[in-house]
Image (tube, rainbow, N blue to C red; front, top):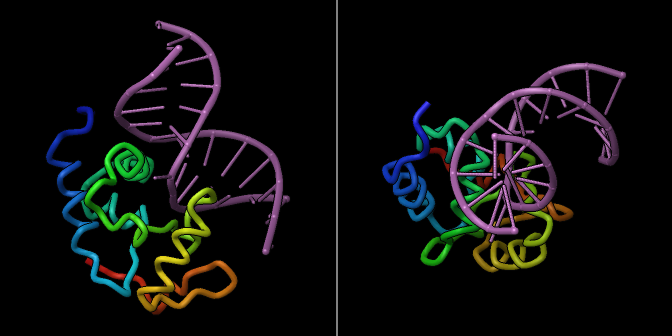
Length: 98
DNA sequence: GTTCTGACCCTAG
DNA sequence: CCTAGGGCCAGAA
């Protein structure tokens, strides 16, 4: 398999930017929508370049944000109106499909 | 080259 | 509900 392309990175960035306020998406969904073979790549992109993206709208498949960002992310999401139950976002209501 | 490390996910127990 | 293990891909040392 060819290594990651700029196209994939741009696709991920575009998808994240496309998530409306008050909604969230999972790493796996974004990876799948962008055609990436592994959800880890999405995490890598966020870590390296999250400058202009609403990274707080991206959560894990369990509905829980990454450990180090959990507090902050939940705060931001709560400000946008995303309901969370005991540190877990309600994916059934807030999950955005592409 | 090898060997961690990391915004992950799935299945089993 | 929890932990453990395997798979996954891209950097940094």
